[in-house]
Image (cartoon, rainbow, N blue to C red; front, side, top):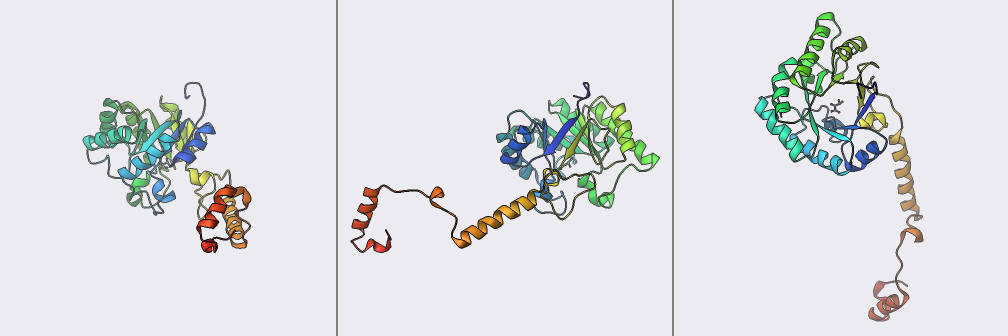
Length: 277
Ligand code: KIV
């Protein structure tokens, strides 16, 4: 797609139903992101997410899709201890989760790990810039690469990761001109999130895009729907109708054969046994 100038839309999904819808809408790459720690599990950060959590959700996403590439987001501390640890985790992502590729956060220092996993036949998507698993080290959700020195470091990181064999790279929350420069220098596609319009693709979080997270919308996100309001209204109507007895009606109820019903009354000894005709 990079070669033909087609922009790549990537989106997170965490279950079969949403993944099915996302694929049907034309998304070619689905990320089972560790953002599920926040969107699904209700944590403040992605740090508590485990490998088992992502395996569980990836299996569901795989069951809901047939064409999309499924990328497994390796969680905190499941790939940074050693290249061997990364290989073991990535192997589980593919074999147990059913994913097609893994994603790992980190710059040039992760290049040997990327190379080791790629050498084993597992495609790796890299991720630099604001790497949420390092949120405590970064001192919060801060834009990265704002001065010339740190911007140059990001460019060097991207080149090292490409050299190590990554097939794509996520650029998160970095200035648009830096992302543009990286995109021009790399042969592999860049996938931006808060990295401006010049990346080869974009990635967003399902819940942000569809208005399911109401308390906070990151600057990089755009709400294409307000599903939170739609859900509140629909569930509110359900609550009201159960309360006033207008749900369920005959349309949602099941009939019984007249003869079987009569037999039931007679078995109940004529008193109906509490069963009202
Ligand atoms: O976990 C995630 O959803 C991500 C994307 C935001 C890139 O890593």
